[in-house]
Image 1 (cartoon, rainbow, N blue to C red):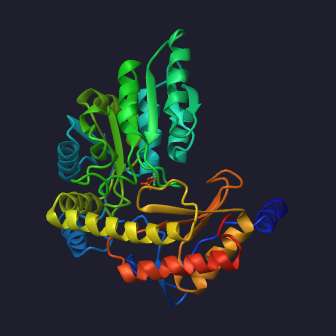
Image 2: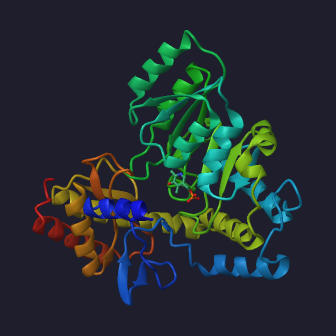
Image 3: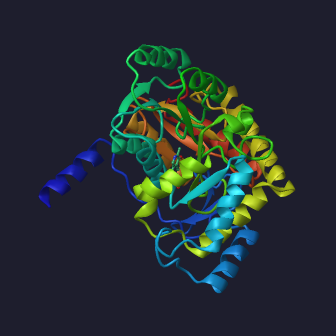
Length: 394
Ligand SMILES: *Cc1c(COP(=O)(O)O)cnc(C)c1O
């Protein structure tokens, strides 16, 4: 016990202690925290679907008709019609033969990589990939080659060098949109490389799904290479407003995972209410309303980024609704976040180990149902707080 307390005290001294913030209202562009209204600038609820009436209704109906629990894992007795329907709809949405549900994005990345490759194989993984991909690679026992973030020249060199002694299967894996920098992977160039070197390409589109591409089909649609990505992983917890994750891929990939993926096999399947909500979310993303919400989100992003760039802030190369503002060191970063919180703006200060040392940042995320005027006012407050702390040209 004493050692744990010392560990916590040390974290606190270094401004590295993480604590939970209690949200007292439903998720929306504003939330209630500690009895106070806050403009929410750090949720992944990009399209504002987390409390959308159509999704709430779908959850209630399915719960009334099918109960609150699925009762078992998919391979036992928990594979309900709703799961099969959602998988068919995802496959159609993504243009693949089949799809498979996972309980979370974290579990999906663990289970997909562990289920498909092993110690005789090699993974090429972007240096900034999400922790769940990193853990999946470790779990698989495969040889791991980490390439510098989005550096296609370096990746090509690694592939060329390893080609002479190649054994086993090769997998190139990347986030579609990187969660801490808000930039995209160059999927067109990754497709070229994966074809040339006969590797599989896996894209984790947790942040791109629902948002990018004219139809919200994600980063692959944005780059015009939907049909060319072997393994398209995505989540329902972000733009889709709900919970859960999926892989869209060929029939044989899915069948192998049903037989081999431990995260899929050894876990109770998603409850009916969640699965029905995901069906409703998919339908909404696919509709005219979905298109309008994507357009509003893009307008808000444009407005917000315009203000911050005009003030000369470093936005870490962001090209999406995830907008980091570089602040470098933990203490001033957390001070800036606290000061903004006092001014009614809730966003996160990001520190190591989530980002490298010296790369701390305030990370803002935008929503379709943010009021544009409030977005401009929030940008002004961020600029003012950073100026007060002398962080403008950090
Ligand atoms: C959020 C996220 C995940 C995890 O998804 P959950 O459904 O929240 O577990 C995986 N990959 C990336 C890139 C993410 O941003």
